[in-house]
Every structure is written in structure tokens, then in C-alpha cells.
Length: 79
Image 1: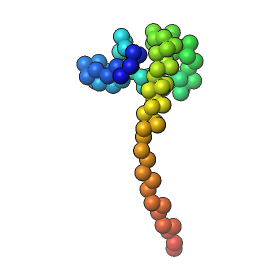
Image 2: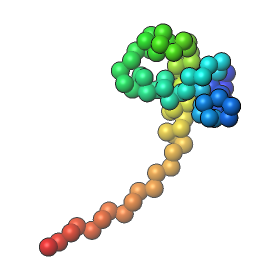
Image 3: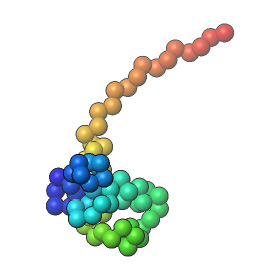
């Protein structure tokens, strides 16, 4: 993927992880979303701040590529 994130079917069932660790990108992003600071994530998971930024960049790229197909609005129910 890049110098910080890899996908290997032998590690964490092929989920994207921080290179050289078994720490999933989702855990990094989830920790930040849950209120952890970057420093707390770095300490808790033994990753670097560059790894954390790479995880956020990876998540942002996934969201950017997502295609949304709006559903038709349901008709109002009348009595």
C-alpha cells in the first residue's frame, strides 16, 4: 500500500495494518474517533505519529472513493 500501511492475508486476516505491527488501521482511526489523542494512540499501540497520519490518510482515501447510491424517498403513508 505505502511505506506505513500494508495488506497481507497472513496478518489480521488481510485487514490493513501498520507495517511491522499487527495494529489494524481501523483500531488507530477508531481510537482517535473515540477521543484518544495522537500521543495516546502512539503510546498505546507502539506506532509513530507518521503511522497515525498514514492511517488517517488511508481512511480518507477510502471515504473519497466511496460511491453512494441514494435510495428513492418512500411515499408518505396516508390513513
